[in-house]
Image (cartoon, rainbow, N blue to C red):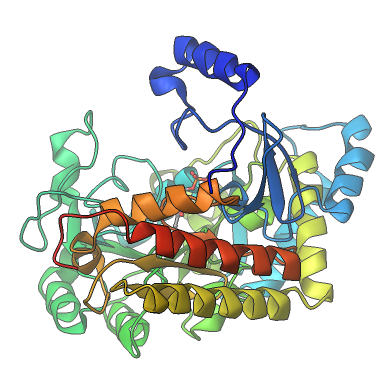
Length: 435
Ligand SMILES: Cc1ncc(COP(=O)(O)O)c(C=O)c1O
């Protein structure tokens, strides 16, 4: 049932991309995917193939592509100026709106990407604590900085807390200042923090790590022990902020960190991210309060620009005033259940994990509670399943269904049909695992 059209127009764009972009791509998705348009819960590629979109631009388009309120806000702002470098009323209003919504946010600073936000959050924690080491979790993603790219996806496993760099070009000294711990393993984390607390500047975690929910009591334990030693706890909420609830994962799981990072949804599809936190720590961005030695300069050309701010504000307005969360959770629950049934009915040993706004299937017989469990799942089978879904007009990233408030019943029905059909087709392929 391969119904994807390919035409010469796309072929020529692909070969042009191959000339000017390393690996022919922007680095995010394979070079043979060229998208042209998005509206609500759908996208169209350059060949006019229409897909139900569960990539959502890697998450920002939570209320759907080209939402009329967001489009209107952008069109009104564009002729009035798109960036000033200086303070402006829309950026200030966006900061107020976020600080009202997010429990740990007394104050915030804007940047343009999630990678920058986590880089500053770690630096801020180190400046406040006057210690160098950061504890991060194996398999946790915090963007592309040298520190974040430690044991994100190691193929060669080392003993905790030894990090493994994920990229060429990272100075060796960075490894000396990162401690790696296993997600959802209370005992190991407690014993590492007890051992290293005097060297730790901060602990950074995705409260929902990629797709893995925290086990009962895990985040609470982390809050308690970091509080005990006065180590700043950073929740990386680039993905979960305004997605799991209006107050983010810290509201959803009811654990408040000292600092958090936000991105994706708060920019409504434009480049905005933020470092948020308690004033006592955020004051390190203010030289007048902390003096030259303790001061963190933080400058960015596009920080808080009015165009991105109005897009973010329009998005947060929609989320605050309507039933978006109920809709997203209803849609996500139906699709998670549809995916489980498709797997079961076709005899695949698989686990669907996540929360309704964000989930996926792993081909594994083991309960998945951390990165090492994911490593044991059948990645080749998952890639094939994604490919079969795409041939059936369901578009997603490698390992995530992002749900939007714009997905409707037609999108759900088409997707469940595609899941069943792809799961049946998948039986024809053999994989090299014990599943
Ligand atoms: C949890 C998390 N942190 C940080 C980032 C980096 O954000 P950006 O791609 O905006 O740099 C991402 C991106 O997906 C993310 O998922």
